[in-house]
Image (cartoon, rainbow, N blue to C red; front, side, top):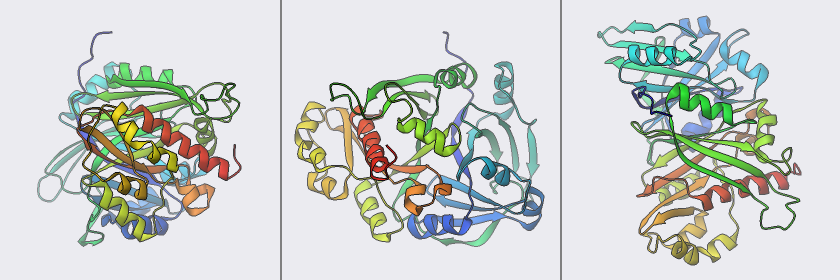
Length: 385
């Protein structure tokens, strides 16, 4: 297939959450993750949209979090069907007209025509949205020329409230989503968004067992936009034990396909994880001691050979490492999902990943397996598998 013309994506601008409890989200982001609350919806927009929104920011990570106000709004409709989750991803683009034209010609399902706004300082904003195969999540494409507010009807607080980003979050590294049937989503990403395949893997978390009587089978394909380096990791369940696969369990918990986690890049993962653990507002998935018992061998086999960190610090903080060439690696850790963190199914199966890349741009197969084994252990402890 010939390479398609780029949509001109510059990066991920924001993720828009719909939640039952905005105060709980505020405590998590401000008190736990050290985000600043920078603003929110004004009374007119709140009444018109029937939802109240707050905007949180840390580095280049921006989150809009909305709760319903009465019935009929987008947040209310989402939460009638799903638990808390990411309903919209926003993407910055170079030229909104060009992006719109390319998507229209490729058969994208466009929700609205280009919406335009101008602020009091003459800044301009243009945007439109499309439906996606990511369950009920939509994508919004945005071009801004000096328009300061995130959207019309957003008002900034006189001073940001709360956090100072002391954990060093920088940007969204990648988006991971789960599907019951992956191929249509991959074809859509190729033929509509113009993304390219970056990485692919298939495994079973119990494949060391002779009969594979337990464990989670899955296939994963990572798609990316080479120009912006925006990456999407996409999973589907596979046999045997399709119904018990954690991908299928996500589908059931989420009431459909959708975004499973966002990976947030950090400048220095060791102090970030240490600080986050100290807040007691954030909890991470565990990794067995055997992973760290074999770490020296793992670093040798992966040809990383040398790392800057003390391996005992990685063990103490339960941070994972992967890579594929000498002194080029990544470090990552995964938080527990919101339903587990709050002991409430309505909080949803979404979670965050923290990642620090030290030369490695990929998705290490070993850590990928470790993530899913960690999820599986958590589900087993809850008696779900």
